[in-house]
Image (cartoon, rainbow, N blue to C red; front, side, top):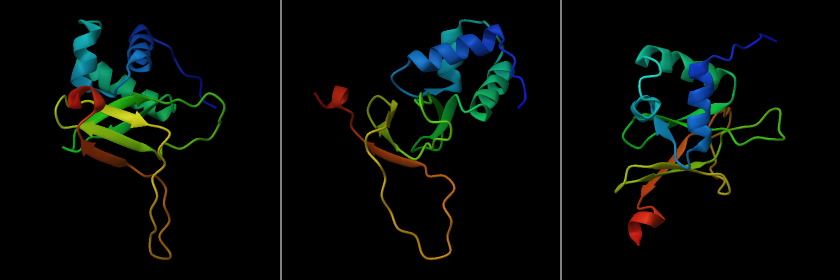
Length: 127
């Protein structure tokens, strides 16, 4: 297995994503890092974190990409096959780990990954 490098940028980006209750976009991450590194470095770090299975990509309802922490403490091989909720009011994206998507495909289709994004109004915006 390849040895991974822990840089200051990688450590801070992972900490930021891990502490967030919602998925974060590249620009949200860049704004929160307050000039720690440039946008290209952030893209490289995010790609590395996805490759290392520490974060996962969430495709938002509008096609934008956000990043969320992987919450797999015990599983060596886990999946990201859970539902994401995209709020139409505040534009946050939240992982709903306890809700499992259900669907059936025609025969001979093999599922490798599922990306479910449900759109609506989150509890904070509906109150």
